[in-house]
Amino acid sequence: MTKKMEKGLDLLSRAMIEDTLGEQRYEYSKTYFAIWCADGIFAETGRGLADIFGLLGWHDQVYLVQGNKGSAPWAVDGAEHVVWVLVGVTHMPSDWSMPRLYFLYQMEQLCSPWITEEYIKVAMGALSIWDFAPSHTEYWRKSGLSSVYVPLSIPLIWLAPNTLNKIQQEETQKTDVLFFGSSNKRRLQIQDTLEARLAAAGHTCAFYMNYDLFGQGRDSVVDNATVVLNIHYYEHAALEVHRINYLLARGKCVLSEWSVDSHLDSVYSAVVAFTPTESLADVAIALLKDHPRRSTMEQNATEFARHLPYASGAWLRPIVEGFNTSLVSSVLATSSNNTPTSTTTTSIDMIEEEEETPEELTRQHQLKKRKEGDDDAFYQRNNSPSSTIVETVEKEQTPQQQVISTLVPQPLMAH
Image (tube, rainbow, N blue to C red; front, side, top):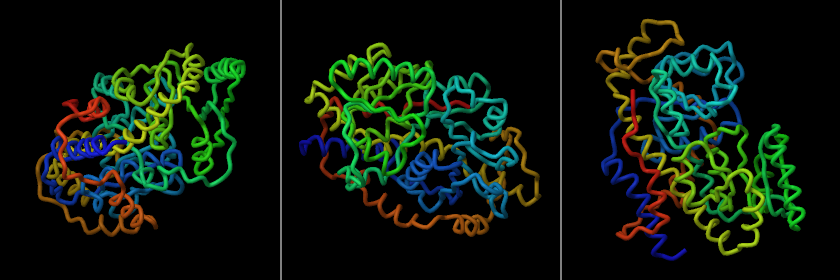
């Protein structure tokens, strides 16, 4: 990467935080947020959201809570003073009540059977639905619910130098084309076609579809693949950015089917090769033969991943700041009346301004919940390459910068 491109990309990061969001840090009057993720499946998403809060200067006001065993973490004393962000409610025990105040981070495809009546009730009770796909927000709004687009980010630890250098933890056989994910009839049919076509062309491929690729094993297998596939589980799916973002952070050449979300496809087309399903084998073979193109895609991938947290922050900050502190305080103050927790919709418009509530119980409760190693994570986050601010200003934007800039939010909020 040239120094000019490096400075330009770092300038883009600064622009996302300072120009788009405002140069002055917002004093948010210490409203506390807790991000709950159900289990390890959603842990990376939860960590990514927590890192965004920290990146925006709210690291002492947000805590990450993981687990779906025992009682609900918001059922303990003091938790009524916390605003929760729920990640992975499809894995929430059915006997748990809902928090008094919460946002729902929506990660399901709209055609998924996980969108059940109970799931809709949870969505109705949320202050707002944060969705990973812009195309989904219109669906929720037409249903009369508040919904905003919050781009899925990545844990900042993925951007640490050792991660980018792809240090191997174990020996893994190299493969030309890789796919990993859960299995269904659609994916199995595509697998059969790809395996036959790639074998005939003299290429190897590997499919992991038995929930057997996680952690360091996943890193090793991915790093030893030349091209990594993104194949939809559902035919009418929005782009699976939770899968793709990880691959981009590893600097991989990614090949995907087109999705039903034209905005996401447009944004990611700078770093992902898109093709119709029937052409996956042809494009995979072409990529394997085109080393210069793959090399460019891999370089663009890491640059794109570095700026995902900033782009996500650009969307998240006005949403959180728009959640007026005085309105929140009036709701929290009513918790002293021991009002039972309810799953019915809480309307921000119905809240009247009252005095702010004390926060000491919240602080004590969340300090207990804070996991070991968080301090190290905060240190790594604040010292990662993505937090660098470059003083030199380059006015010209490369085509790569212009595409990444499309992640910066336009007015998209509706209530």
